[in-house]
Length: 161
Image: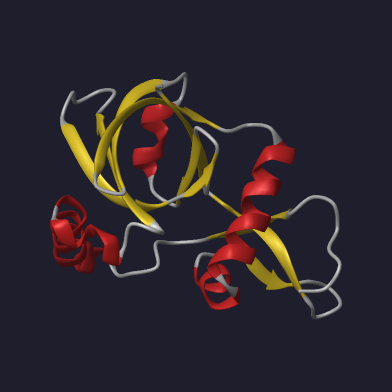
């Protein structure tokens, strides 16, 4: 990537999930089982389980998600509506590198913090992943630039001591 503008540009194009909806019925339980097992080391560097209760339904959810870590804060994102459960903050559990931890999840709203997360995701996860997730797209000059697709939710999780 070349020198970029100071803030990732928002797009009007929504970014859907990277897999067809039907595939999650296979992929999520498989990844969840791996993350809960001694084999978690295969994926723990980039995936964790996010465990939370639905805001309206009260139903318990356990979803494998990609994450970035910065000290005691984790960052995740979603192109799906389940992320709205964290508006106003909510307690969560995470299975992170084989360990069950507690934390508080909240929606990110600061454009500078979102920009920082988008840039780190694009840098640390690679160009192909950045394109697939909608975080890298050609800018007006044709070079790849960080973007935030419409309908993308960014979540911060502050882990408890």
